[in-house]
Length: 229
Image (cartoon, rainbow, N blue to C red; front, side, top):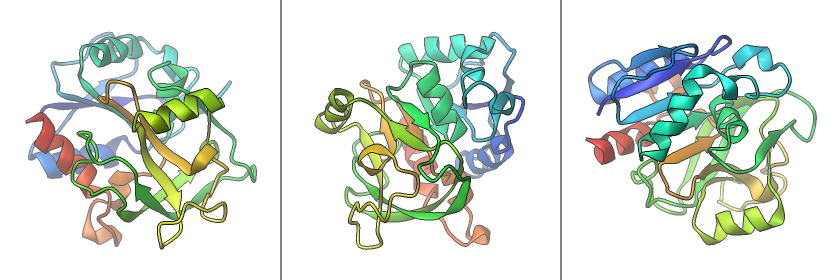
């Protein structure tokens, strides 16, 4: 599997993702600068977490209009897998590659901690190493992670099996108390209608290596390698 990580000014998880991809695939991804108009021939494009363009205007709003995003959109349309993590998820919604928007957290504070997540869909390339109903833990680190969409869009996501992950309690219950940011229906990650684009607020690359204390994010990368090789 060949991959590329897009680097925006303000990205701070690009190297973390590159390390995870290198460890999982056995070779390093291409690092693509936001002003580049082209991307090498790859099977996977990752938009990493961080604070692209300093989060001016809205999180991801300026990055969505970077020259590289025109090529990301074109590749996604052709079926190339695209993974957006945290700020990358925000960019995907701003670019129209995923529905909805990421609003400020309901408590209006930056949140940085581990959360429990329930795997809702395990039939996509990104999540096939999990089983539906699995409760996993990953860290979050965001101020604008409150996923919002209108009721019709939310119903479509639910009905088409496009909710990837949901914030939950340790027993898997998707309660208000387990929702760290106010996201609609406890949604932590979603797929596009084709299933080749995924956005999520938690950071799987920060739960990849045992040295970090947790490996619950590792299956995301292993599943992609398995599906795209």
